[in-house]
Amino acid sequence: MATVELLFSALPEHVRTARLVAAAVARRAGVDEAVLDEVRLAVGEACSRAVSLHRSHEIAGPVKVMLTEDEKKFSIEVADDAPHPGVMAATAAAASGSAAHVAPAGSPAPSASVPATPEESEDDMGLAVISGLVDDVEVTASETGGLIRMSWPTTPSAVTP
Amino acid sequence: MDLSLSTETVGDRTVVRVGGEIDVYTAPKLREQLVELVNDGSYHLVVDMEGVDFLDSTGLGVLVGGLKRVRAHEGSLRLVCNQERILKIFRITGLTKVFPIHTSVEDAVQATD
Image (cartoon, rainbow over all chains, first blue to last red; front, side, top):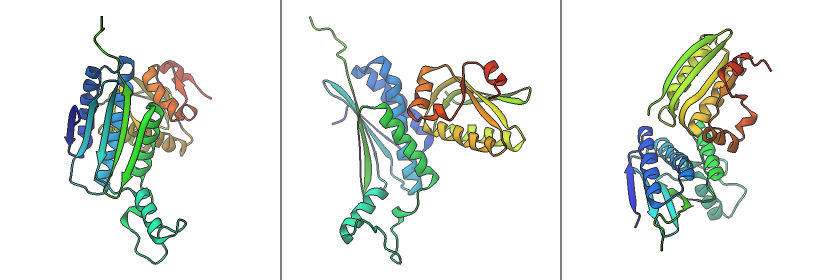
């Protein structure tokens, strides 16, 4: 179970709250002060991306942030409920037995295969920032949602004798 | 902290002083400001980011959008920033090659290259 779980409506004004909460929990978990700016930025990027995906897919459900303090690391998971085009395309290709033609001409294209919107381009920049900032990052997605998992090492706050 | 914006004309340059946080919530305000300036004929912009506490990719997107707009009028968009944590974001996205980044408003206002 996560140390702290945060659910927020997919609205831009709540992303700042998620940043503040994540930074506070990270500090408490023993993440180095010098890295807290990166934690703040990375979680903000992940949440902005999730908010944008929920809004573009008109998903009413909340964005979920899980902050987990382990013995040696602090992990953040940001989950969205949006269907992910890449995964949908890959699944469609696998199902049809053709890797080259995801959506054959004439067939009704799934909504997820529409051309990238400006919002999706901004999402790409968000992912670029995350991967530039965080060493341990994993992005997974399925037809039912996506997950960005990031972690940072922690240093024990108490000095053992 | 919310976003604060103020503008000042110095010669043929318009200095936009930005303070606070530029993120997915506040970036549209900055976008509006830049669009308004360009629509009003200010094509040489200096964005002073010394008062910015936080910048994310949405903010970067707005600055790139501003640059595209002024370039369409053969203008320029220069940044003023000395904060390492903000500069780092420009570096990891490769945008230090796109924006001239100056250490002071005076420098940016006088730059001609």
